Length: 379
Image (cartoon, one colour):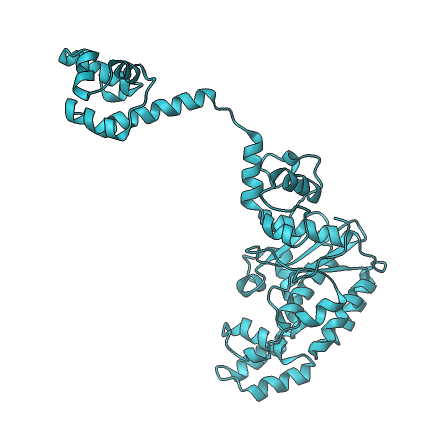
């Protein structure tokens, strides 16, 4: 028989003894071991360890790893007999492995004293995801998917969306109409010349019926914005402001507003991840909904015909005074124009000093969760 045909190292040893005409007593004497111990090894009641496998290899001219591999296979087979799949363990693997639970506790999204208190964390997660039991939390592979998204999402991104929903559901805003949103666009356009004016954005959006939320992104989620509807007349726009720059702020905001105006997000949540570079363009490989929103956002920031004409006339050398002059004519902050020039030319070092931070200006007047703030909602 081949060594692969033996089920235990004891069977192999017993066969080797028979071939040599040795008894268990002889082997016990050679090994300086009690005969009872040898009997237990041959019967599989005592394991063959690394030291013994080396000695047996010396005696029988059989590689030591043969004895160890048989022992390992036998141990695994025994374990499989008594082992049973544990759905709860599988659930914990997904929940604790995929979700940034420590961050969720720290930011007040779930009520738990420590990630180590598993029952408490599972209870809190069940409440957070609005599930009747741990097994029904929708990030689990076998749970029903209640959240329809336009693109596949990670567990962290889904948790972020749930937090946005919690906050948006408790906000009180004006009545939504498409006409009101179009009117708001004109008001927003008039704010783009100065950084301080960004503080007015949350109020203007609330007046036209849009629930505007700012939620700090979870680590590695790479979320820029989202658009969805709580019901037919309750659009929600949320932003992470993870790129704290005036040009990114206005581009992402206008992108999400276009989703609202076109009714995107009613059937599937429009989650915008890494809305920069190629994903902020209008290439044919981008989904129609995203391409249309990108084009509206780019034209809102800087009319693209004016931008293309400027680049064609000034490239490859862009003078700062020329850029500032065009920004003044267009009544937009130089940082917004700088961002569009960078995107078009892929020269991201141009005029970077003008891409000023605005998060500290927007946050005081908005519904915010993150950066030390916990949104006042009944979680």
